[in-house]
Image (cartoon, rainbow, N blue to C red; front, side, top):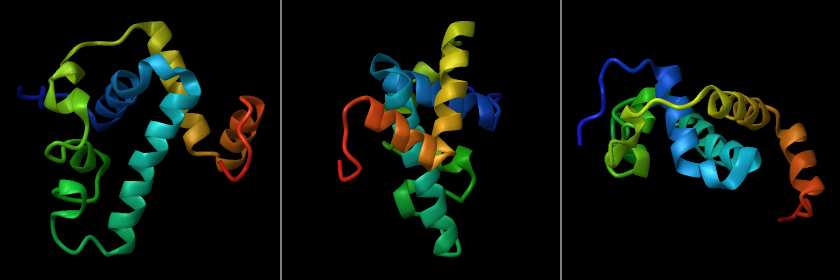
Length: 117
């Protein structure tokens, strides 16, 4: 299924994070977001030497999210569906956690996971 090409990078990120881990709560969504940011960091660290890493065509978040067979909500077209205001708030919290490793680790510890897990 084709993804709506009019979706902004931010909106695509919000929808992928939501649909990929909505049943896992804010922490689960933060972990998904972290994998996306990590993929981007890996591509940028390799000086974006051509397409292919994670099937991305480039180093932008949109390129990474649109990589063939990388994220189920993209390949299934779920990202074409809007998300609720409440879901947006949870995604915003998840993205904030993903961008703050100490805060994410603290939340994981509160959930009963050790630093090594």
